[in-house]
Length: 155
Image (cartoon, rainbow, N blue to C red; front, top):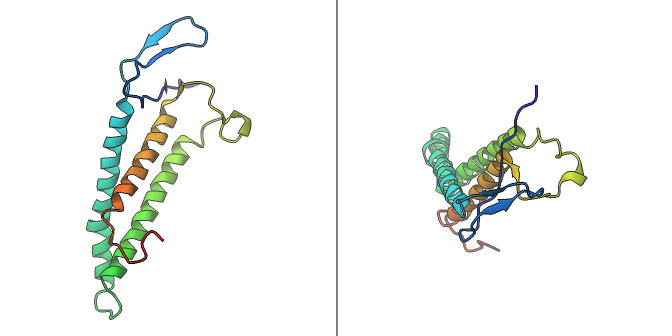
């Protein structure tokens, strides 16, 4: 039994009429959703940022402080580095989970000659992977403003 694959397009251009004509010119489908992917990326970025910093402040930092309580070398900077490392591990683990669930099942993944995009239509789950990855990068950019700066930052 074969399963149906839901397909979609990217809707990043807010000024576009988002009209797409099939390559066979047998029908024209009009989409009125230009720019809606930016809303999805924004929502996903807020969710990812909240989960990332929420677990950092409510799980990793208290856990590190509890475990290292009483040691002479433990300080706030060590706690921040530990929580930042744990948060990065969590982010990469979740990304690997999504990559496993979405990308490994694509028949074109292991054939390099099929990596090129053949048209505007892509699988919906693959589009979701792109959007969530973009949202994670936006969350990371915003996180730069939350991190404590040192004199050698960005060197």
